[in-house]
Length: 140
Image (cartoon, rainbow, N blue to C red):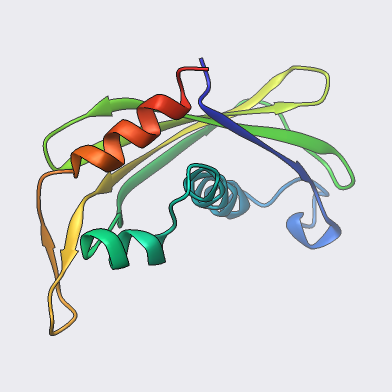
C-alpha cells in the first residue's frame, strides 16, 4: 500500500541523449515526492526544524530501473515507509508509467537529526509525533 503518490510529466531536460530519463532525476523525484508528502501531512523540513529542532537528512539511496521512460510521458511516483528504526526510517518508492507498468523502484534511508546551535547534526530517536503523522497518512 502506498501512503502517498505524485504525478510527474517528464520534461525534455529530464532526458539524456538517448531520449530517456537521465537516472539522477529519479533520485530528485524521490526526494520531491517525500517533501510533498510531508507538506500533505502538515510538515516540511522547515516545520520539523521549528517544531522539533530536527531535519530528516538522506543517509542512503538506491534504485533499480526496469523500463525506459521518455520525454512527454507521465509517471506516478509512489512512496511508503517500509521500516522504522530508532533513529532512521526507510522509504520505498515505486515508479509507474500511466499504463501501470512498473518502470523503477527505489529506496531512501533517512535519519532523524537534531540541528545543533553551531549547525551540526546529531542523530536522535525519531519523534513520535512525526512517526504518527506519517503512519496515519498511510492508513487511508
